[in-house]
Image (cartoon, rainbow, N blue to C red; front, side, top):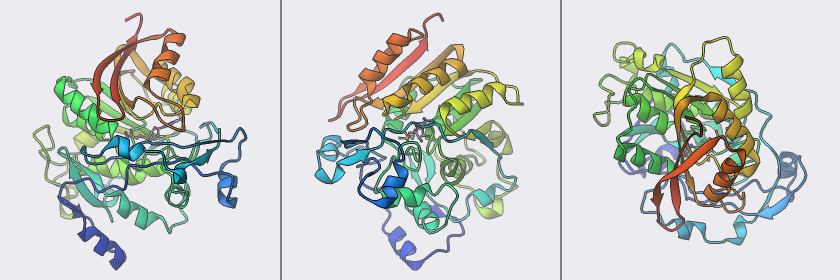
Length: 365
Ligand SMILES: C[S@@+](CC[C@H](N)C(=O)[O-])C[C@H]1O[C@@H](n2cnc3c(N)ncnc32)[C@H](O)[C@@H]1O
């Protein structure tokens, strides 16, 4: 099922949209490669930091579950990229205001549906944003570098990555209780995990992504599209339309949400030292966020600062991220060395490249 809002861009776009199938994820191939630094002027500008080394990344974005991860991961010379050893840390955290007129958020968006949830069609966002000289400009940078991750600049949130669906499945199978819980969708991208929590009656849901473009163009529209009347857990709800903008929306659901962009350490500082009261999270849901070991320290500290002492983290990840070097085992080793959290594997998805769901809790709890 797909539907669109005030969509009036080029004919080409319309033609392409006609090819989109019902309720199927129509995102591009599951390949992702890191920023190709070195050889072009543009990429040299991006890879302003040293320690450049050659590697490739294989991380799957949202694909139908039948996609063969091994095939998608097969070594391909064109995927060999120069990876800048650049740390995230340049993006200051900020809270995004929720617009009063929700329909504006959905303007020019085309929605698809998967597993009972709506999400914006990324190809259309790319078409509408790629020619804009947008402040962050991650869409055109991502397109021009053929890359779903540009370290320190764009961290992949425009796409839905496949472990999101693993974690959604796990939360359903485990009958995870969200009622009265405060939930953080950390590194949210499309925000489907947070939306699931919201629809299952979480008390509050916060969404965090590195890039503010992702929050404005992807996360917020997705949350709005899923927050209509009857938008409980009873399957997919009627999508909002412009004429319904004030009457049919449930601002109550939106008022449970807050949206943040910025780097993790900055984000936790904003939450802890900001001027709004903050209660620690009962649940932190996070998918495909441990691909880069350079970020582990910030990720670990953010979780330890923001998680309630009895809280739980559910983290979904591939066993290994080729090229970037992160993955479940190296992350667990890091966690063990820090000696703050205990981890437990709660689900293994053994399809080609193995994927895991890990539960984390404070050792002292
Ligand atoms: C590969 S994307 C995954 C998006 C989404 N969770 C999914 O599964 O579709 C990784 C996400 O982690 C977040 N992220 C990665 N490194 C980060 C950092 N150092 N600081 C803040 N956010 C970061 C980005 O927001 C990005 O959306």
